[in-house]
Image (tube, rainbow, N blue to C red; front, top):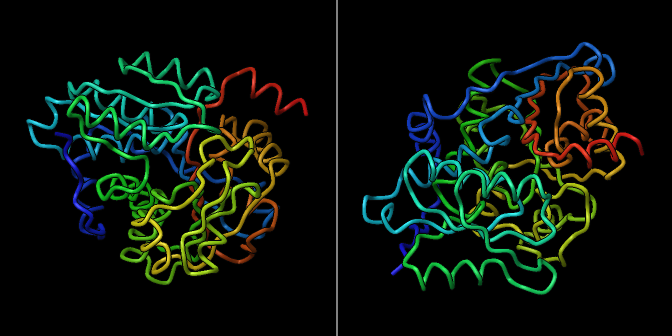
Length: 325
């Protein structure tokens, strides 16, 4: 039978424990600054470069922490996950490092580079139609049939705790912040970051940033209940979720100050900024938080602002097309 995770909300203690588990495994990614960005916004911005993380995104943190937390019998049976790309690569890579078999359910229209990388790490990829099929249902069926543990992309205590280590590292390196801007899809990174910020920088306001087309997080935050939307269409392919998770929403309601959204055009402009000014390749989803600061969606003048660049997995052809637009 598949192993189910305990439905207990993680705490900062879990984030700290995850940091110990990830030590020497996850990259301690650099924090970079930009006088141009500071001049443009009036704030002091600190960019946490998770685009330089193993497997190209912050997702490695949560994926590795979740698999490393399993007991020996669960590791032997293997895991199954569903993802549009970055969680897929994270689970596949973590499984390879830990000797754990992985099956990943991915949308047929996921970026080809992400599918190829996931297979390259040794995972078995099962493709599905994101507009007509339920990826979680497919994952649960595989888990039941093969006895695997399902590791969801965000609504899992070990995943949330692992993702929170990015903000933990950022604050430990640069000191207390006035604002922390975090991209938002299903809420794993945002909820984990909020746990870290509440402990390490109590006066810090945490803001989630999602694509305009996928503003279920904002709607949920404002209504006080989880709102489900149709599959959004945006270039931010890592944030095309239809609803927040039960766990992530519970933490977000308690710890997050607000949720905003940015347009695809802002994401393209932000990608161009990172290429031209900082020589960094950041994927559209990874630009969400930065776009909110650079385009004034969140006022940052006079503030110390942490910005998590969540990933860099954009294929060269798409990058060229975005920058040419």
